[in-house]
Length: 327
Image (cartoon, rainbow, N blue to C red; front, top):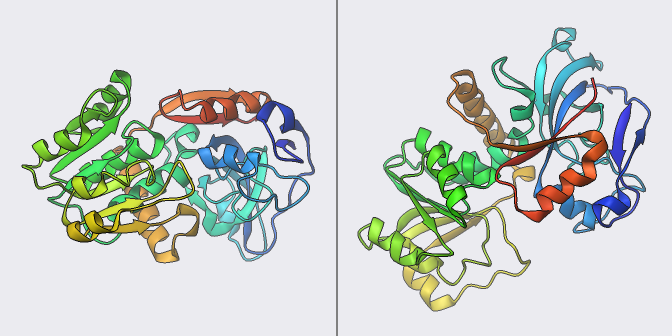
């Protein structure tokens, strides 16, 4: 099969290799997916750069992807052959990810993809959409609440705005860094968009909420917003953190304890089975009803995987980056 891989950590153009690898065969309880697309996420380039140790001398990157099941292992119904699916955790704690023509995964990691949902969109569900859903739903409902989505034009933020809207949030506020991103956040369903480069984020949030603050913050950069968090959240409000731009997060004790804010951390790779199944079921229903929009910023062929990684690493594109795999 054609695949991309790296044998050492480093810059994309220096370490990513495209060539041939042996076709994987499904073990008991597994399916093999002939991939049409592979999603590139920030965690992929960070892993390539060495944020976490390489698990083996050779790693095929990427956790997200979509395609068609073409073989099954013992214990899996042959009726799944030919099924359109999307894949989650393709390269989490394993060395063979979705940047390849074929991947084998446990059968539950290949989720049926509705016919009306493209393979490109399917490659955006494993990390961005699941993260967004969990961030909006963990520790209670947002129905009738005010939600602040940090980075509302990002791959997770775009889905988080939609999830909050579909789950009945009363007011959705999003932060962005440019007018173009503001348009995307509005299109996703944000009621108010704040350009944090040109506006006072705290003042705008408080004005929009009658000085009360928001019920929930969906946080992409815990460290960057730690100082202002107590000013943004209502008394005893919630901040759900799925990312940070620096490894250390420091909160000032007095403002935090006075606000009573709860900070909830999670990582999408380690969702509990029940939480993941709930998210998958709800997202599938929305996909079947055509209720979700997808933000594909760019598609690259597998031969240009280095460019795809660089595009995500640059942070300049608005939306998800997808790699198209050879038929």
